[in-house]
Amino acid sequence: MEIQLLCVGKTDRSFWHDAVEEYEKRLRYFIKFSIIYITDVKSYKKTTSRKIKEDEAKLIFQKIKSEDVVILLDEKGKSFSSLDFSKEVEHYMVSGNKKIVFIIGGAFGFDDTIYEKFSKKMCLSTMTFSHQMVRLFFCEQLYRAFTIINNHPYHNN
Image (cartoon, rainbow, N blue to C red; front, side):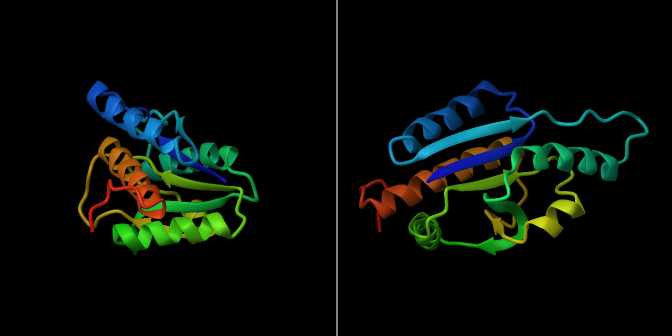
């Protein structure tokens, strides 16, 4: 199985990038993991948020295959404890799924076409964080999930 994190926009601060890269390396010990960055759509004075979301959706759809399990990281999604998230990841692993793609949208969220196509949503927090922080939080929680699954002492019960 493979897990991919699909993100709109790049990480522009080196300390966020370095931290995410550290968890990316740790995750590869357990699973094939990658982060794909989609260039964020440039906004101009008259560009509406709706148009930006539409353009980002087109770029997202280009990266998704029909057989991929897609989970949107979205404030309207289901919240998990770390233990429950590890059980969810383990469930996908034993279900024979080849690839799970988690998606972090752009600054304006997801276009309606994304919500219509992909119904699975997960909420990391009801608080608002920068997308760069969310990338790090997600990677840490995914790493934590794999340490729980593998009885590694990283997660203290």
